Image (cartoon, rainbow, N blue to C red; front, side):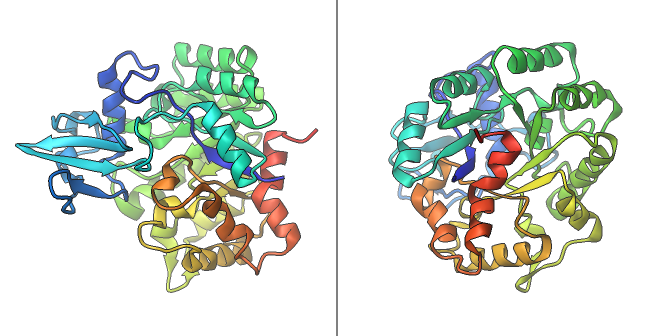
Length: 364
């Protein structure tokens, strides 16, 4: 069984996507894209550009987003203007004329690539996704499992707790997507292990909800921000031993892959070794701008991770449909399935689907 642990469906991005207004949705998008490896260029002439104009650079909050007429464009592009110049971020594949991804497209992609099942992640930039993910799951239960979403820093508030109950009991969702990126809206006023969030974590543990957590760092940049947020996760692992964690985009290659080997601090390695932590391997979406298929550099990363931590808690993910700005969906699987010869048949079975099937209860 092959399971893609990182897939997205979404409504047309020109709209609100379930947020109270289109402006709020656009601010989620602009905040997410203030740092991206997607190609950025001037629309007139195609010269390379950067996203620095999206943010003042003074902090990690929506208050520091610049007014650049940020907007959703055609052909997979998100656009913005600085003076008379117009710029594009090629966040989705060029062939996506309108930025939307219905569940029927997901089923078609899964079928063509030979993938049995996918986990629908969420995140504020994609919209308020609980209802959409539930609808897709109910329509295609043999192909799709959806995750719920609440705004991460305010997940302890009564309305968020009520939404979790609704998503679990009425919508039938058994996992939640929890993204640190959402903290930019509040300017990182607190961290995920803050005591005010205790009712949220207690509810998830009581209901047995899988936590798909996406950690990019912040409020400080680079390795310092990542380490700061991972410290918060380590604290939660101790407080809530019943929770199981799916680390979305989980390989910290940017920070700890040095000279062809993993060089993690002991406290970071301990998280990857924890029996309740499952790490998602989603390399082409991060490195497809620099590496060419079949990604021998990525294969080396995977081998070293397997050698260090074993394969029993590794998960494969694609980040579809985003990844098709770099490679085809099938290639995002085949660089492992066809080219990672160092993995045994049993290891590929666990890594590419078995671990996810057990974690999300997909068997039977």
